[in-house]
Length: 146
Image 1: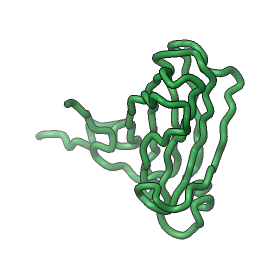
Image 2: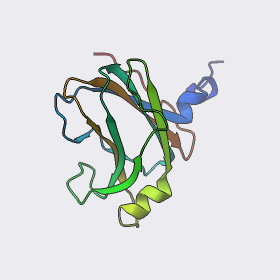
Image 3: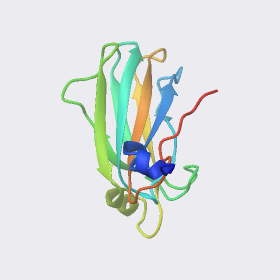
């Protein structure tokens, strides 16, 4: 008898993990990727520095529109106790969906993104979103291979 995917998936059915290459080539605030929070109870966002040593400003931003075309609301501006100012440094920030929905105007769904600003335009990193699902669902975390 074959096992179902949910019987073999443990974390992949509970959390969704997304990773993004952060290479803004700018010193202006850069939105990473908008993510719907409809099926998730919380999000953990991390930044892993791969190039550079400059200062980092890290905001978690909510919006009522899936593409961020509505009014952005800064839900959280985070200041790490120690700045991720060397290659290999990483920081993590967590927020509940209820706080995001409230900030985006309440009612229904809300979308969230990390908005990062580096002081030197050549700095780079990897941004990771880890979302906790409200219910188990097969393949929340999927392979991405180009």
